[in-house]
Length: 319
Image (cartoon, rainbow, N blue to C red; front, side):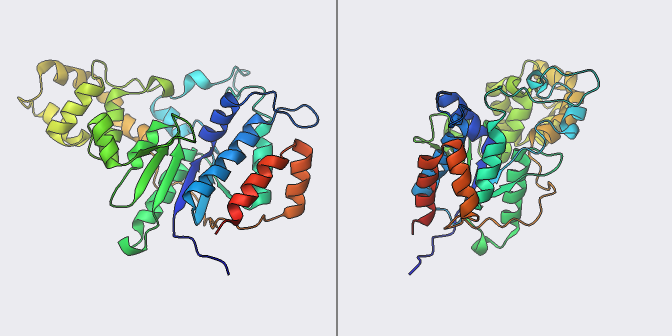
């Protein structure tokens, strides 16, 4: 008799996970033909562990169809500019992916398809936006019908989606997949002194993020941003206080915020994940058996994935 798992949706920031696997596992892990498969095997082992430990009923491998969307670059041209690979003049931007990782990504695509694990992207959007859209859809359901969501990522940007009322958490991979940090609103308050995911996003707009090429407001660091949010509630409240010359805001803070007017007009759209990316209907039920056993067996043999595939099949079959 098959046991019905409690409803839970895992949303994987897939690139975040396979990059972690690539850098954390030696590239001496190779297929029979000598091609490195450390990222492939690492990702499969991560998924197997996540399914075993968290027993989701639904799972989506969220994908970057566009790692540097035009709407973000148009707003802030420095967005992820340092990650652009050198290309011919006039060519589209190409992400600078390590040479030994690039050929592994299509293998990941093929193996996920053979397993029957949903892999979802959206044209012109990042995986973050796919995650944001799937979270928004779940939030639109009646409260009694919502499925709890865990977002698996190493990207702090996803903290903006944390919402206790909607049962949305982030399982943060900074300390590794075996030691995930559970980020809920209490953790946001403890670690960042912000009360909600939305407040985290507002703080991120003000603070900026050099790793994404976001300048932030010059002279407004994380501590000052948090203090302003505590006083004025949100970014809109801060800007209203600036414009009203509120006495609770120092002249220096008002000047810095005024000097950043152009940035603050566009930064929220860049920092906040899209809740309405063009994601179609998603068949996200976690499979108990592979969608294409013969294809999976062939991929397993060709790429030397037998042990990892065995582990993930065992995880999928658990009651």
